[in-house]
Image (cartoon, rainbow, N blue to C red):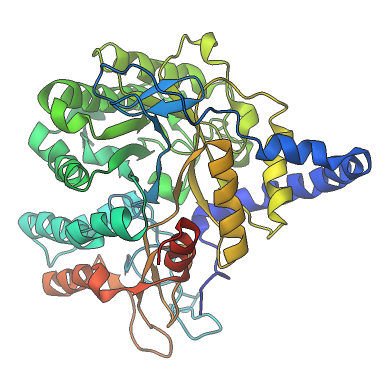
Length: 474
C-alpha cells in the first residue's frame, strides 16, 4: 500500500496555483490546438535538440557546460541522473521520524487522523534546531553525537552503492542549510564562518563516498537566513524576508564564497566530484506572494553569488533555479553568465495525462529556451508506473538532467510511500507509538530513532521498482 494521499506541507502551496493554470491551459490553449494540429506541439515536446555524439575539449578536470549540454572531465556528454538526499541536513516534518510534539486540539489532546495515527505540525529546521537545543536531557556533546548518528544512518556508505548499482544513477543532490556553514550571534545579529572542519567535514565525507562510487554531487542550498520562499523546507515558515535584508543576502553570498574557495583550493581533488552548485532552492522572490515564484528581482542577487564564486577562479557549473516553469529565466547574456545550467521542479499534482502535463511546460515557456542545459532538480510520479516511464522518457529525449524527490522518507502508517526509494515504516496507528520528540527524549531514545532510519531497517518502495524497470535493470 502506498501513502500517496497525504500531501506534504512542502508542496501544498504550489498545488492550487498550478491546478488553476493547468486547467486554464487545457481549456484555453491545448484543447483548441487539438483542432489545428496538436501533433506539432507533441513533436516539439519530444524532440531532442542536443547531439548525443558531440564531445568537447575539457582541460578543467570539472564538469563543464557548452551549449545545451554538460560534459565530463574527458569531454564526453553528461546527463546527471540521480536522487535527492532530503531530510538528511534539512528538516521537513512529513519526511522525518522525529517531531517537536504532536498536533493538539484546544483541550490539549493529540489529534488523530482517520487511520487513528497521530498528526504532526510542520517542522522547519529552525524549530527542530531549537527543540534539540532546549532538550534538558542532552549535553552539547550528546547533541553533536546525535546529529552525526542520524546523518550516518539516514544516508550511509551502503546507500551510495544503491544509487550507483541498484538504481543505475550517477548523481546525488544534497540539500543543506545555512547553519551547516555559518554561525549566528543572536546578541549582535551577525554571521560568521564556522571552522573548515566544522563546516566541511560532512561534505568531505559525502564527496569521498561519491569518489569511491563514481558519483557526482549537486550541492543544494535549501534554506538561507530569513527564508527564500517561506516554505517549511527553507527552515522557516514565514514571509520570505531574505530578498529585502542585506545582512541575509551577504550571508548567502558568503556561504558560497566559503564553499567555492574551499573546494577550489583546500580540497580541490574532492571538488572535482561536485557537478554543480545549486545556488538557491525554489527561490520565491515576491515576499507578499509565495506562489508567484521567481521574479526578476531574484536574479541580481543570484548574480552576486555567481560573481563571488567566479572571483575564486572557480570553474564549477553554477545552477540557477526558477520556479515554477521555464518562462522565468533571464537570458544568460544579461548577466554575462557562463558555465551554468537552469533548473525547475515538476510535480503532476492533478494526475493529468503525462503528455498534457509536459506540454504545459513547453507552452508556458513561450519558446524561451536558452542555449544552456536544463535540470529537473525535483520530481515524482507518485504510484503511477506509466507516468514514471513517460516522464523519464521525456527527460531522456529532451536531454534533461534530473533527480527524483526523494531517496528516503517515513510513513507513520503501515504502508510505504512512493515519495521515496526507501520508507521507514513507523506503524503508529492505534496507539502503537509516536515520533520521537526532540524536546523531551533521552539520548538513548534519540540514538534508537537514528538507527531505525538506516536502510537496513527500512522497506523498499514501489519507486525503486519503477526506476529499475525503466532502466532495464533486473
